[in-house]
Amino acid sequence: MEPDQEHPVLELGPSESWNLLAGSELGRLAVSVGDRPEIFPINYLAHDGVVLFCTAEGSKLVSLTINRHVALETDGFTDDFAWSVIIHGTAKILQNALETEAAAKLPLQSWIPTVIYVFVTTTPEKITGRRFARGPAPERW
Image (cartoon, rainbow, N blue to C red; front, side, top):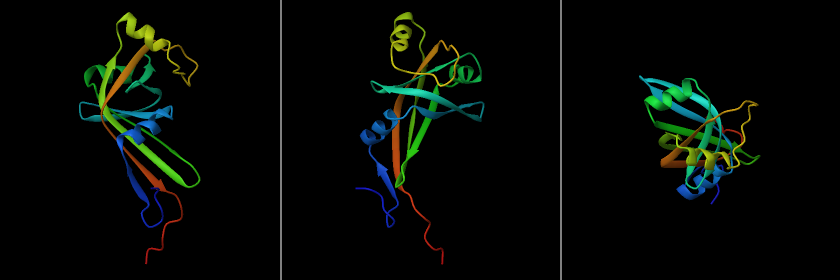
């Protein structure tokens, strides 16, 4: 079933949501420290039930060491449909050499031409998705 003008929003199941997440590579990571939310653009790889990304020293990494609970949102669109997927989960900074070496072999490509050494995984605890029909808004009155 696809959304249409009569039913423009379709809730997606976890499997379809994960497939959309895995088919993308750019998202927004939301963290909260001291009641102050922050959102960071990241490129990521959804692989083996976790989301992997790289980062460098800075506020994003500090935030993850203080509060590991995160949300990640990604979306996309075609001419007819748009979609949005959100995961809520727990972030883990990879610290042992075996985990880091395994992560470095995965096809995660940074969009920024810098060397980034810190790998982080996010294990989803909840995943939701929605697909939207695209088109002009109906008349208000």
